[in-house]
Length: 281
Image 1 (cartoon, rainbow, N blue to C red):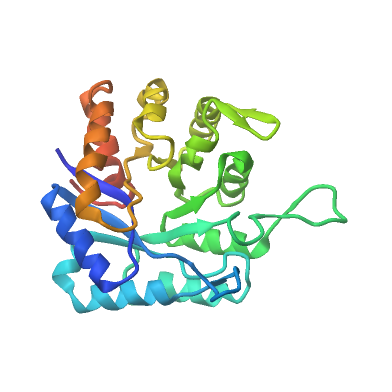
Image 2: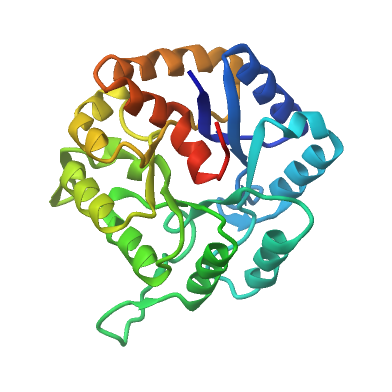
């Protein structure tokens, strides 16, 4: 069976080599790798955006062509609502180095969201910088891995409505552990109903399966996965110690293999990511 990993974080050349070795040991043929778009400012408790991780990935893979074969690199080192980011994004999408997409874009963690709150306007306005960046990604056929927690799930719809040609991967599935069949503040969030609505309405939406409270959450979603078998992508979301964690992650994933149709399981474990990236199995 073809196995790919839809999200791995790396922060140094050594971590790239370690991720490559762990994938080789565990039969994983492709990995989406990305760094982190922000760093903690020393002693301040505040974050700042940096493209250092993008530069490290680009340099490492450019210098080690054989190493690059396994990886699908994504760039993320920019503030998605800062107009000064637009030239950087354009350069990455059109430069000589082949990025596989952009992400993980943090719309809520550190900066204003895609929906730009304006106090003197009753309805939120779409952030024009984010809109331009996402539409440029769509024009380049570059998928965007976007982090939006479930309480703000309507922003996924906002992105898809305003960038209708964008291939959007919902990072961590909205982190289901904070939303699936449970409460967040005063509201009850039904992840299953949201997935059904969004996957039915938007054929260019994909769900990254690294979120949730383990496979137990996804086992509750079997009917949804079977109804949309081409739209779910297995990911580890590992940030280090890849060799130590991959066996456990893959063993957990096998629980889905026990209840899904064989073809559906093969799709989420590898074929869907390859199709999204335009790679023949």
